[in-house]
Amino acid sequence: MKRTDSPPQKPAVLPDCPPAEIIAGWLGSATLAPSMHNTQPWRFRVSRADQKIELYADPSRMLDYSDPQGRAVHIACGAALFNLRLAVAVGGREPVVRLLPDPGHPQLLAELRLAGPYRPCEADTELHAAITARHTNRQPFSNRPVPPRVLAELVQAAGSEGATLHLPGHSETFRLLYLISDAERDLLADPGYRAELARWVGENRDRDGIPSSALGPRDPAGRTPVRDFTPDRHQTLGYAWFEENPQLAVLSTAGGTRTDWMHAGQALQRVLLTATAHGIAAAPLTQPLETADAWLVRDPREDVEQPQMILRLGYGLPVSATPRRPVGDVLDERQEPLPPDTELVFTYSRRGRSRAR
Image 1 (cartoon, rainbow, N blue to C red):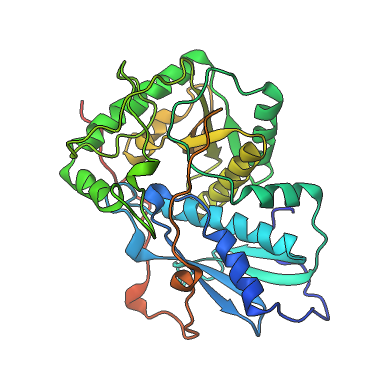
Image 2: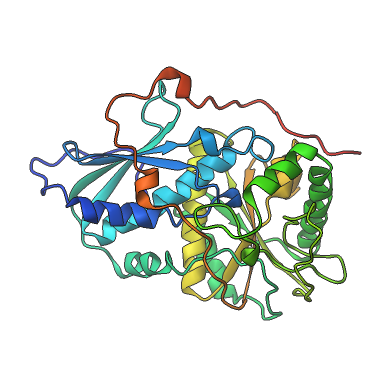
């Protein structure tokens, strides 16, 4: 399945639109994409007459403190779009995508048109099978290193979606871990951020957010390479020793526009599904990217790339899935344009929290 950003010539005759239950299955695959705090910030609209599926951002699920610019919303929706592309391709139709097709409607992030018949390749089938097996893993990983051939495949996966995956060396890895720890300490000093965590994380959840069962333990040495999701709860998630030398990966794009964010989301999901197919676990570490000092994540040896995601990779024990909303909750049946007061306005200032000095 190749990455497509603009439609080719429309074929003269298209197959009939698939049944509603088939499309619902495709959308179910899309909803299994990762999102920050499992907010699931997407909505879909299906036009059977035009044989197209529109992907919208859901402004009610933006994170005001962690994601004031909407970057994480775009990345999550890009990941959902990649899953949808895979599901459509494996379902026998060619997915033709336009990103941000209508500047007048910034909530509309992508349009996927069902083109002619498509014969999925083996790689499509393998990645599609990994969709249901991919889960964020915040548990300790073993000290077994990820093989170089697998890391090379992950780099190639990101590149095929228009992004770059950097694999930092030993010293750069520990510089990034310091940045992550420093950024989290500053984030936790913000009462608004802590309240946002409390809204989306903890306890038993059956539709969205991160249940307590999906949180990771703490490292007795104080070097836990996972986010502290429960700073205000007087409870312990237990302690466990984490891997001595975490394998990090930094996903970057050439720029920091909304289009770049959508490419980053699709690249992220291709990387995650490729890792899952190889038995590799992954967890995001995005704390520095949620501050005004996100540029510090970039390797000093690189030029002008924009870091979009930090991943921790390794071999871990299986974990359970986080909850998902049913397809009916993310399917918009309305056919009229959304009213202007529901538009999601994305800003491009250097807005965000500066790190305390």
